Image 1 (tube, rainbow, N blue to C red):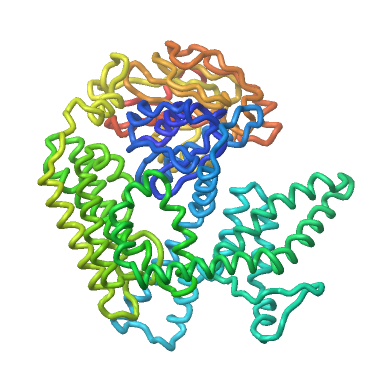
Image 2: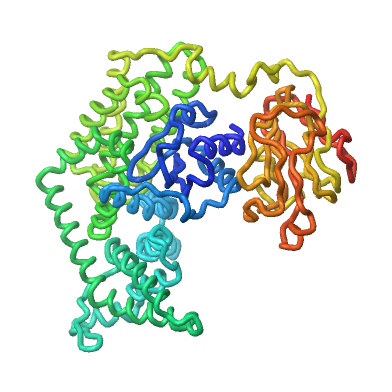
Length: 622
């Protein structure tokens, strides 16, 4: 997958930079907040190389990528400055949609830290199980607090992510979280005597590992901050605004918001305990069977507060974790059965790879790319997940470490109950066997060889009747700029320097003119005019990125002379730019020239010249 070209195509098909309020990502998908989702071209996006599928839920437009999502996200963020454009119309969202969008936006960024700490705890559990750790030793102590760090200081993580989502100042939010976690507050509460501030009672509560209090506090903080911004005189705003915000929010959080959140959390924990006691088997069965629909709608993120609140109270999760585990195994089993039965070689590879990632706990590629697409395998997933979910629920299976649930993280199901891990493993076997057999019995309508996957492959090698890359023996790209020649490895941008976007070379221009390096078609002109894509007639996909971080100039000092779809000849003027003005603003003008589909060729050989002039041979492609 060429991450830069994939990202450029995705940005174009979601409506361009002007239609994007913000974008983030989770383990498998890009999550866009779009001005208008109707602008996005769903069908075209599904055909982009590297895209597994699309979904819209919780106020977010989601493009499912799979394991390469982080690389595509990095490439995407280089293509635009995704800030809110107040001049563009924003589609009004319903209250439920806004709530789901907010919950998802708060919990998604902190998941990697939580998963990392959870896996530390899982490793420690394994070491303890096999008596490889001195329980009274320093190693155990240090590993324990490392594994607990993200959960103990969860209000800090939530303060940061909530502030970003709710557009509040991160520093203020972290300070309020610090107030709740300050050891002096804990010491006051532990004495057992009434605590008061300005004559108002401070309700005793424990805020470590809590969820609701800090989210509630940051939500109110976002309004208090706007109030302070509006009414603070500009002359003393820099000192008065922080004073007003902290002076209002700290006591308000201690006296009102924190206790309300803590009480709500306690009721939520009590509800979870009641469900576990009286209908745990049913809940796990429902989670196991319905989880595909929770993922499709984004509702699985709404379970975050439930899981974290229960975990803070009991140090285990028996509500979501067990059902999610067997569901993930079911997704993997269905995709594997499809891989064994399909006759489409390209689709077989997709099914095999997504089955492995699903068994390891990442299910979106298998769900959107295989099982949902073929429909009948999804029925098997639902049945297998429900049956196995009922089993793990009947035996009270729980996990002692949160995070992704899959085969690799089974140690997270080691608890004080000696048979917990055994029943979790049996549940996985049930989910796999039931789903696998049902998929084979139900069958599916196979993907034809000329279906979407084949079309996507063909699209990457030949477009608009041009000669496929496989038929090219050798051709040359001429220098599009005049200036000093630099190796990619020497430039300051990691994505270019590491060759992650393809092989190529860089030029530090001395003249502000960029011309076409080969005959071809303009495949992309970026909205900020700082980069352009060329599809050569010989099959090379060329990206030219003028300067480092020049996207921030938003087109200033650039003049584009072509548009997307134009046919160009080598040497045709593409872009003019003011080198002096750009350099005066502190931007590095080093310009990478990248062959983004380098892997389609035998080799990409760059010039050994120290400097070059427009029109001279720059890159030889074999």
